Image (tube, rainbow, N blue to C red):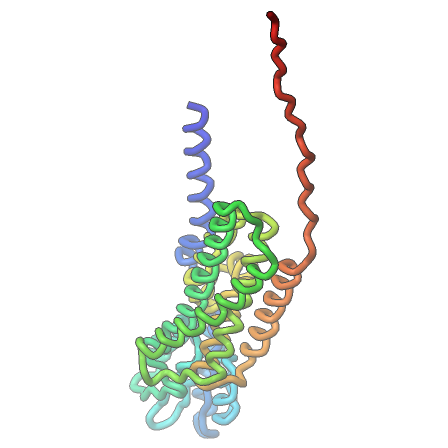
Length: 321
């Protein structure tokens, strides 16, 4: 009875934790201060100023010039541009997280109707899904490889050697990059799979494999209790823009999760905007994860104690006549 009660309690705790970091993120999502640029010729400047007062806190307007607005869009500092004129034009980018773009486009379409819609760096359906998919598959594939290595070594009665740990990281990087490149071409043959895309996917895969391997070396299979649920943060948190998240989730989860760096960095490189400001932070964060993981993997561990020899004395029976 006691064991059954503890099991039920553990299940409730797991449900609370997963509910907070997954379903809770989606349930509390609400747009706040989504950045949008508005441009207008001099004669329509008063109209632009009037438009900038609209939105009720959902949108955050920036009145600027057409050239500056396009630069802000490429730098992902705004999610769309409203160009006032005859006709009005709404400019969006396929290199920006579609979760933010779709909401802004809907609001602007209603506010500035009739309006034409122009998409720069257009992304196909596969192009919109691929960046997040790369992060999820890299995490799960590397996680499965790390767990299998530990289980296999234990069954064989051997410790996991340094060579095996490093080979697993490198192997996960190479194989996951090849698998994901194949998926990209399978989903949409027009997606660019150049050396920049391959290199970034290799960095994501090796960084994830290294940090997972480091935790598994420190905690064994117990690390799975932390690493397995973490992948749920990818679609729940990295799939949204920060302006859609409840502030508590924005600062407690989105601010540090590696999935948002890998996802947005991949999106920029895949859609042809490698100069976007989210690429450099992604390279630094993923590089730091890779280095930190490798340091833990190669750090000399305490040599296992050799068992003392045991002397077994055989019973001696006295022979009596």
